[in-house]
Length: 389
Image: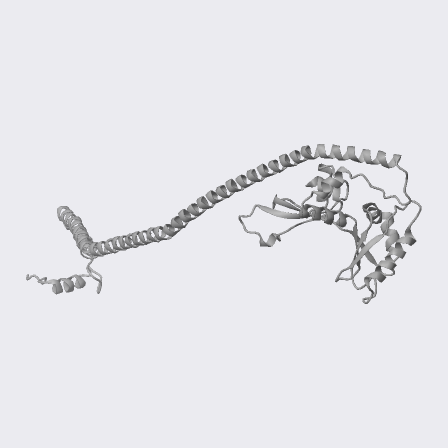
């Protein structure tokens, strides 16, 4: 009997004819294994050793097929997956290296920019330090020069005081001899017969002699201060006038004298109006004969009586004395309410003698480096002004 199985095609036909395989399906490992097990069931007379050998071959075929599959998978992984993994790793490493290189370049650029930006700052700081040092040296030199000038002024003042003392000592004998001569003349006049017309000679006082030897500038300043202490200021309220626009100063003085006469009482101090000065804003500066009369008119009683003599509303003010306060701290709250009253209490000054205070230079015009400033203080009484000075 000839063998009909010669190749792969005849093998498939034979197996299909014997119903040992599934028609149209590929011969996979499970399929081949199934065929071998079906072969063992073809005859009941098949010997056990044959069946055992067929099972052994089946398991060896399974192992061999698994090894081939593993080998093929390994080769497939080595061929396809490993290059892809290498490419991916290489791309990732290249990307990381490029990122690190870019970051390094950016860091180097940032360091360079920081160095470029800090260089002018350091140079400007050094220049500022030099300027501050030069300014401090200049201020020290100015302070030294000012101290020298003050010392020279004190020396000159001391010399002037010594000269005055020497002059006083030199004048003392002359004054004594003059006084003796005056006493002799007085005795002679008392003992001699009195003529029809006699001329009275007053004895000069020490104040008269000293005042006659005062420098013109000092004499003028004393005179101006004395006049200012006798003056009062009348100002009309907004929209009103004290007198008609064409009223002359003599007429104003006459009406003011009449008003002063009307308000006099038995306790009113003597004195009258000496002069009147009209201001551009309609106000009037009145010079009185005595300071006591000016003080009485500035009191509550005198002010009310004088204001009642005018038809329109009038603002009564006493002429104040200005004092420049130097090098005050800018943090001092001079605009605060009650500041002047506190200053009066701390310095034991009469109440309400400090009328106003303000900064000479407006605070908005100060520089950031300024710590001190000058202020202008207004004082209502001359004795208080002298005490402050």
